[in-house]
Length: 197
Image 1 (tube, one colour):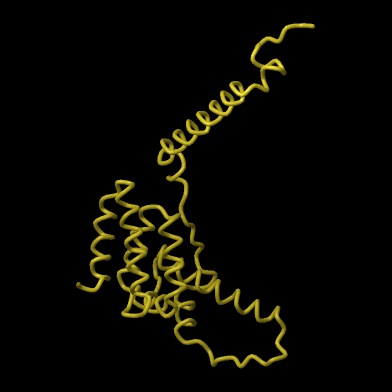
Image 2 (cartoon, one colour):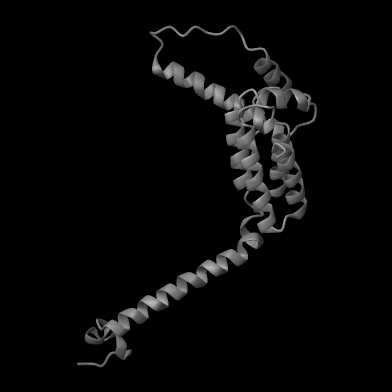
């Protein structure tokens, strides 16, 4: 019988409590080391490549905004309408909304006035807040600043409190990351959204 190169890996010793705890400790320290390295290298390698991408609208931006501002007569959906047709209509509406939000986040030359886009976006406040929430998590600092501009224009509505909470999240995240200009802007928007006490 040949001797094992590492005596602690011999089957009888490898099953001992001391060796098992030692292997568990090495695994834990290794995982902790990988986590620290990932956190330290986060801004250097990862975050500069992560951002939201907004595709330009499939149609002319002016035509999109005009169509959304003046929708055709409400379609009466007969009961016999198939599920596929209804799902296709819902997908078209979601794509229009994404294109409108993308138009706000990445304005193109000759795009409609910002006030028109803002008014349309706040016509569906829950959907707009959901998009701003996504931007505040995965957007780069410029995109988060642009989302703050939209957040500052929230009309007096039931979602104003939700908007203030979202603004507080953006403010705290900017503080933790040392993004002081974004922190200052988020603080201003947060104070404007909160009612005086």
